[in-house]
Every structure is written in C-alpha cells, then in structure tokens.
Length: 304
Image (cartoon, rainbow, N blue to C red):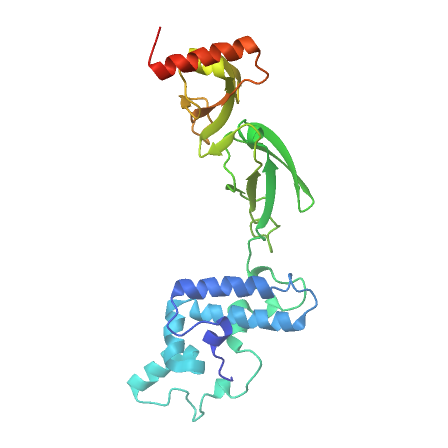
C-alpha cells in the first residue's frame, strides 16, 4: 500500500492537537460530503481520504502507531512481537506481503467500514457518519417601541415559517440562537441552528443608551422662570412632570424606572429628560415694557 500522509490530507501539522485534528476533519467532511456534492466523484474520493485520515489521526493509539511506522502502522503489534521473538515480523520470507499492491486508498478504510458499506451514491449512513445541518443567519428589524414589548413574530427562513415570541428589551445587534431551526441534518444528524440578529431602528422621540432613554421637552420661558408642569412622553404613555422655578436651559431630570426594559430582567432603566427653553415671539408693547422693567431691576440688584 502506498504511503498516504494523513496530516496533509487533513491539512494539519504533525504537532497538531487532537482538538485541531477534529476541527479540521469536521470542516473538510462537511465540505466534501457526497450529499453536499452529488455526482461529484472527485469530492467523493476526497471524502473517503478525509474519513480514512481521521480514523487514524483521531485515535491517539492509532496516531502513535502511524507516527512511528508510517504505512505499516497496522502491522505494528505483529512487528514488535516478532522483534521480541527474534523472527521476521512479516513471516514466510515476505517483505510486507500484505501491502505490496498499492491502491488509491489503503485497505484500512475497508477494514473499518466493511465491504458491504460500499461507496455508491446514497449509501453513506454508517460509513460516513451523521453530520449536523448547516447553521443559518437572518436579520430582523424592529422599532424601538416594538423592542420594548414582548410580542409574537412570524419569520420565513429557508422556506419554513417560524413562530417565535420576542422578549422585551432586545438590544441593537443582539443575536439569539434558535436551536434546530437551521438546515436539515445529514444522515440523521441533528438540524443546524438559526441565528437571528436584531436591528433596532432609531426613534424620533427617544435615544437609547443601554437600558436608559434620553428625550427632550420644550418649555416656555415663563414656565422655566416661574415653574409649572409639563407633559412628558414615556414608552408607557404621557406623564406630568413638575418644573422647578428658575429652571435653566439644558437642565436634565431623571424619571426612575421609565426607561427601557432590561432583557429578561423584569426591571427597567431610567428616562432622562432635558429641558429646552423656548423664548417668546411676537411680544406686545406692554410685554416688552414689563421685560424692560425686569431687566432694570436685575441690573440694579433689586428684588422687589
């Protein structure tokens, strides 16, 4: 049997860890699996090599024998026993008589799976093993207000209709996994998973920072100076907010628990309200006169 470098077959170094070997095998096996490459004989032959290589390198004992004896690794025990007994390990005066005839693949693969397994199309069950289906990716766009409520959604992915319930508090670019909702498994293997990435649209009223919200509200000059009340929008409706006298433009107040819901947390962030002060327009002569009096009083430091 001709020597096959199984490390080259899997594309790994001889110093590769068992984890690296397993990872390389899974990637290549999925890539060249006959069910993924129908009627492709080249891919089918490559797939056989990959399985053969993994049966050797994926087993620590087999790998140790292969590293030491190369193509004759299967005869290692007989060879070592014969050495201990001081005789020809191959017996009957032959030099490796079992492996003098080279073939495209070693007899090891047949020994592992048996001749009855075959390599024809559609006959990959026990010989080729089970493989997880392909993982799928999709995106779902939500408004900020939709993301703030628990609600049912229906998706169509890969021709399948999927009904899910979205928890309140989903973050922008957050990704969730739906196990088993991906591509179908191969040879009875498990289905792949579906990964949903959420895109939250900007909101005209609220700016989201984590689980907190920021908004702006405009009050008139008189309310800013004398105090009063103003209506403020929240995700759950409007609330009345008391404005303190002499409130300065840009002042920010916090409404605790009026922010965004915490994802699966049962609590809420806070709402931060910033005041914009709007100056009056179209003043009458009397109003201007009163304001002029106020300015003079302020300049003179008079309070009454």
